[in-house]
Length: 287
Ligand SMILES: Nc1ncnc2c1ncn2[C@@H]1O[C@H](COP(=O)(O)OP(=O)(O)O)[C@@H](O)[C@H]1O
Ligand SMILES: [Mg+2]
Image 1 (cartoon, rainbow, N blue to C red):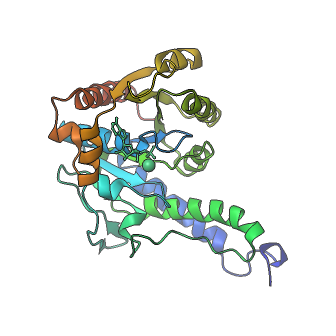
Image 2 (image 1 turned 90 degrees about the vertical axis):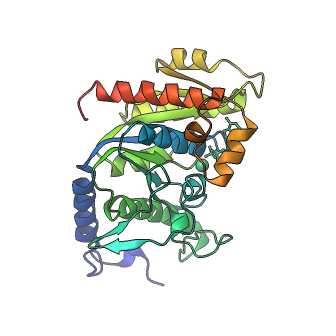
Image 3 (image 1 turned 135 degrees about the horizontal axis):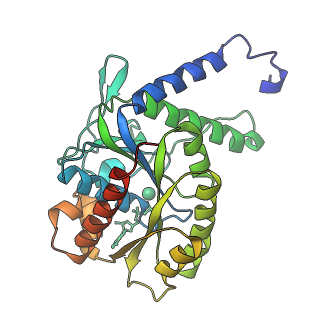
């Protein structure tokens, strides 16, 4: 079987020009977005998607125009958490019109493209040894397409829900030239903090501003102090979000807890954090 390295040039596909054109389209698309914010954590299951959905909803409820891109291609949860699962995607001109949640958040997710619940996304490579490289390349390409070919329109914020893994931010930072910053999520456990420390380092190496650290599921475990971790890393501590079964149930229903149960401590925490981030972003020029 012929491999990439056996092909002279690009084999006549002009793939370099195609990618370049798409990257240029992505740039034009993001010109209409004031702030692109990535929600990250090296660790899985700490609440990145929950934070993304609730920050997006909190901002939308106060008048910001908000979009969410589910960058977790193999574990997409944004369509479910924002209540747009199963909505049909309409093609409008050269782009796909994203469905809107009840509060007006535009959502794009692999979940809206996959036909079956159980169907994982697989990356076909000529050999298993190449699957890893292939996956990285294909993921980057899929994200580039989602960013470039979705009709986001004018947005105040586009929130990217990243998959777990410390390396994922590097890919996104290379695709999005205008990343306003990252929000890092941890939970009160040494295991989480160990991995999250690496995420902070990656964000700093990627020269991406760190908007701050959120401690989610506060009170659930007697873990180390997240505010101390933030102080040691020299990044802002944005606040604690308590563990609340109701929040989890609301996410499963597709309700943004921050809007539907605003008086609860978890919703108040999300609102306060959303306001803090928004005020910080509004105070500085678009970067
Ligand atoms: N503060 C919280 N209280 C209760 N349940 C939570 C909280 N944060 C997240 N969850 C639940 O924990 C699970 C994992 O959260 P999720 O946002 O999917 O994590 P991640 O995106 O980091 O993998 C979900 O079922 C979610 O509803
Ligand atoms: Mg997630």
